[in-house]
Image 1: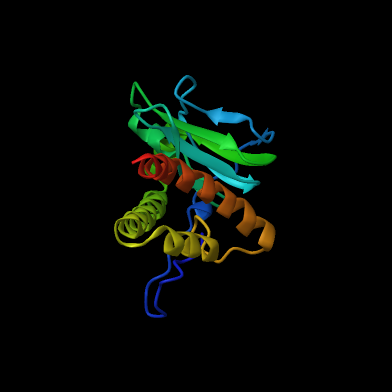
Image 2: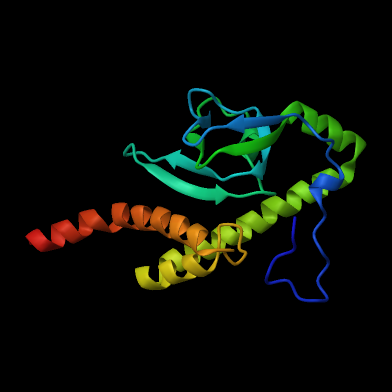
Amino acid sequence: MATSPLASPSQKSLEDPLAHLPCSSIVEYRKGQIIYNQYQPSSSIHLVIDGKVKVSRLAYDGHQVVVDIYQPDEFFGESAFLSLPHRSEQAVALENTKLMTWTTAEIEDIVMKRPRLAVALLQILVQRTIDFTHRIESFSVDNIARRLARSLIRSPSGSVLPNRMAQSAWSRSLMNCSRSMWAPRARSSLTT
């Protein structure tokens, strides 16, 4: 896992969780295939080896809200550690995808033997919390055009998007999300 793009040269680099995790079997998912959802909740943490995964939550009104899109070398599914009886989270392969998976019991066992893994996973969660905080701040103060511009420049992981196709797919995802947010307001303002 790379350090944050905002990291200063004097800042300590992040612990690499892969240095502490043993390899596990690789599971392949076809484009559009559900990895987990509220009916088949996950009891594992996943690492994207190849492909992309969209994680979304079911809102109270029944609409899916995109939480994030995960790319190679990114972990997701950490909500499995909570073992909540009712989960509204869903993960879907956006393209043919390969994942490495560890159950929460395996992770807990490894952490007992290799405590630095806990530090590495905690750093990932803290970085993700910071990223989500920046997103919430952007929703609060930025207009739609500025949020879209930021999203086109940055990927979900905070790194610059590598190519035009990735930018296009990510922006289409955001546009669909944005439209669902502002379309009802726009329609109501047209009728009043």
